[in-house]
Length: 546
Image 1 (cartoon, rainbow, N blue to C red):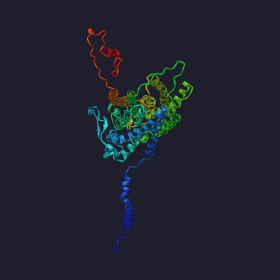
Image 2: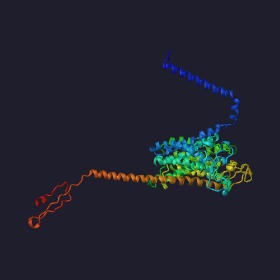
Image 3: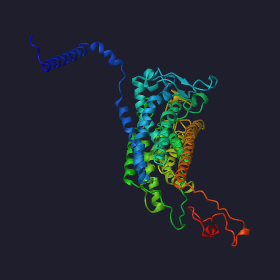
Image 4: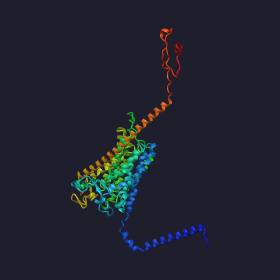
């Protein structure tokens, strides 16, 4: 028997293995082609993936990118590296935290209130502390769908997660951009994790997940409940409140600047004006698709074209007003103030969406832009708070303006059935939607109910993150202060030990026996050494006495 070489045997085995794989692939292909009748019903039952929503969601990612560039333009050059890290870390931490725990907290009970998506019907676990006597819909936190498993492993839940991803990334990086490089790295990262993993999901549950703020209209007859179209308060106001808590606790106040009365107070420095302009353009582009990827929206009732026009007009008017203001006050238009004004207008537009007419959108954007230089001066020069990324004027105040504008200026033409209120008619008018004090012709003003709902929601979305951020950052600051005291004590003890080892030990002083004074013809010598005597040296008079 002739034995084949080992190399030939291995080559034959590889050829046979490739043939088996080819035959298996061919068999799978034949099976797929041969069973069109069985595959057709499955394809018909599967939900159709909406490419327009995917496009809007992809466009929304320009907003966090623009915010990172805008923040990098206004911080000192030494913090540019930290700002870049904060942008990447914020997006990554926010998305992962929302995937693991945030989605369940936000939408774990969405199936109880939203019946237009069968894929979400399994998410029906909502916890509340309020009894049924106050109403049936006081949800406070969801408790199903952890890590997108179980009832959350559906096409509808995945689509909802994708739409939320740019929002949670933005909410996470806003406090990170303000604190990174000025607070300890662990503190800033833990603050971002708190926002992305807990605070933002809780707020999302209250506003969009069927929680108690959304149902203020159903339970307390306050208009359509709290209305925040695309996160002006749920994303921006909430994140800014947590970031301001971190600034107040961890960042020292600015030193008071002494400027002569004849000299103008300088504007905040613009280190990279080109980045500010590019970031503003990115925010403007992202705002056009920011809210329209949300699969929970009932698009036929929302006038999408007017909503997109409102976002564009609010951002544009928000940019022009601070540009003109700084030009008039300082004789030089400021690119950073103009870019931040555009971002402020976009934030306000995200709150009111299509609910106000375009003329009112321009007015709200202009007011939001005007507050940018005014609040910047107030914070820097009067309160001496080092808010160099524009947390307060861009995110906090603009988000507040936007949601309050709904209670004042919503005209009722958009939002029929929002939060389950008035699916057919509202206040006796067929097709009336979200309405504030200034209703359109043929609509009835919903005053002050809608405005009261907006006030309650704004207060809740500010106080919850501000108190939680103060508690977290205060605890971390106390721990850091204690560790610094321990290190200083150890360093002082170590320094004292080193000094004791380096100093030579003193030599013993020898006592001199002096005879009685009666037997001496000379004065007796003192038996102690002078203070300046060292090294065992003796005084000459003492030797003579001996």
